[in-house]
Image (spheres, one colour):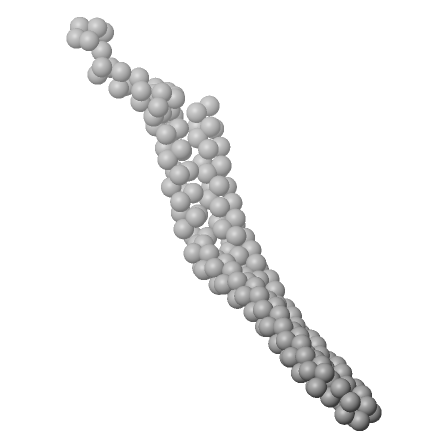
Length: 188
């Protein structure tokens, strides 16, 4: 009976070794796949940054054109009035010019902030990909299999030799044999 149990434990230990090897290979492949996904996300973020930059430049140009149109309309009004109230109108032109410049610069600043944030996200995803690849390189199916083999061998040896009080293949546990030495003198 003990021999059958020993055989079953040996088979289970061998199965554990194979399972840990396969699991490690799967973990390694998963890390590589996750790294590729992160790189793909980083590339998409870079494309988003370029798109945001183009949109910001177009918005800046629209502000500039609108400002130029307003200034041109005010100059036409000044010319139509023939110089009457020229001082007030010139102040109005200066105000339009100033506000238009602020709006244009604000648009550029907001665009730069948006692009910076998107690029930071892309860098973070690239870093994640590098970390996942490093994790994948650190996974060794053989090392995991050897660790499982050593652990399983210990369990099988414990069962075979009867360490820990369990009955071994010889019919008597090692714990019983050790108890012989711990008995008081004269106790048989």
